[in-house]
Amino acid sequence: MIDVYFWPTPNGRKITIMLEECGLPYKIVPVDIGAGDQFKPEFLRICPNNRMPAIVDHDPLGGGEPLSIFESGAIMEYLAEKSGKFLPKDPAGKYAVLQWLHWQMANLGPMMGNANHFKNYAKNIVDDPAQLEYGQRRFIGEVDRLVGVMDTQLSIHPYLAGKEYSIADMITWPWAMFAGRLAATKGENWDAYPNVKRWVDEVGARDAVKRGQAAGGDLGNRELTPEEEEARRKLLFNQTNETVRKAREAALKG
Image (cartoon, rainbow, N blue to C red; front, side):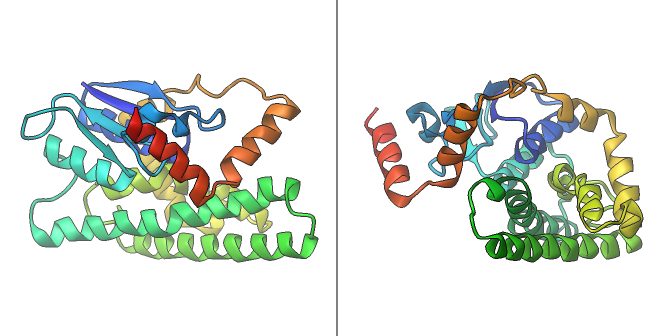
């Protein structure tokens, strides 16, 4: 059994999609990031970066004691190795997949997260409209460029890494499915990225993807009060070296 420390975000859904595709048994352990669960000692012992997702495999590859892994890219590689699926064995095929997996981790996910922050959250924090406008323009523009990179790749290949569906597609899809919202921000529609749209629809039609996307869907549905929303913003967007260090030290002492 694999425990999945999870909240229903694109990063969390990468892992449930992969687990459903591999047919590996798992149990969701909720990590309410708005309530601060990611700073609890029991979670920090698994993930020192205080970010979900993370997993604990109670029947790990190679045997031995339960194995904990954080960072979604590392988790995806581990699950691919454990299941023997969705990551080619030959070096050329393997690294064709891994370069796109790392591309998502370093580019599409962070840039989409920043674009969402400046579009939907920063207006409640930033008083200077010029700063807000610059942040929106900077990150929405970079996401547009990145989706263009994907669209060009998918005009040549059916999947990101070539002919075969892989962990590169699974790790990217939960973020890329929001590209239509980006197009709407620019006054366009999905036609701006026709090859990404084709791929998003095809991947999204897979039964395992549907199950993985739906997993934990009942979490986080409660509407927050204004006071709770303000507390959530302070928690998520005002972390410092000091706050993280104190939380980690407390976890290690526990």
